[in-house]
Image (cartoon, rainbow, N blue to C red; front, side, top):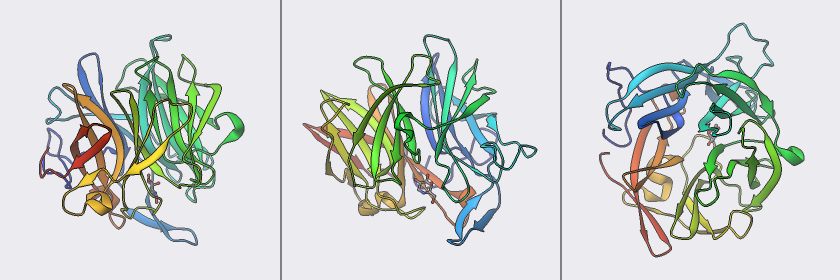
Length: 305
Ligand code: DGJ
């Protein structure tokens, strides 16, 4: 798989799983992401580039290289009311899936928004199997009614608590909103990090006593510098440290943006989207290994995954 390019599934079709996550359930790899297989349009005063929502794709693999399309885990609904988070005219971004030990269900969260990004809620859907189909539960605001923009899910390996990590306050702050054990609601515990830093596209990893959070700046579909921040505890103390990227075009995250960190055989990898604003369905992907040297995190460019 050549990094920075579009990738094909086992049938030769474009992999449509943008802003996504790769994770393992029951010994199998799953890749969830935005299906952007629709025509580009421009909307609103700002002429924002978008495609209508198709849904959330699910792919499976045994080796992380051959991917099989399982279909749409969550589908847009053309017949839904235009105000419904499932309507194609809305925004359904950065879907992530987590398993609830308590209920035995798979829970998907996604950035549910209006086309002008003023709704800014967290959409939730539930399934009995990782590949779905997921049943839409609703769109919610976490405690203190913070807005939800770019987001990820993170389970603390230290204590098993899970968080919806989301840019809020119009991207001014990064919030960690704790999820209940059912993973479908919030406990009320919220930690605020990186005030006034305007970071988005969060991706988390724990290594050797430190939590690392890779983020991007906020420049729409245009690439900018990644930064990683660290903290010894999730409740407070997160500090921006440095740009982890090294190699050609490292200063704009290799023309990409972070979306998730997964681990395979003990090796962490950063997933990157290479957005093509004029042609979003042909946005490419990279998966790059993450290295640690003491407290320093490095993401070095590699031509292939
Ligand atoms: C940046 C975000 O990271 C993406 O997920 C998407 O919302 C674009 N902005 C839209 O401009």
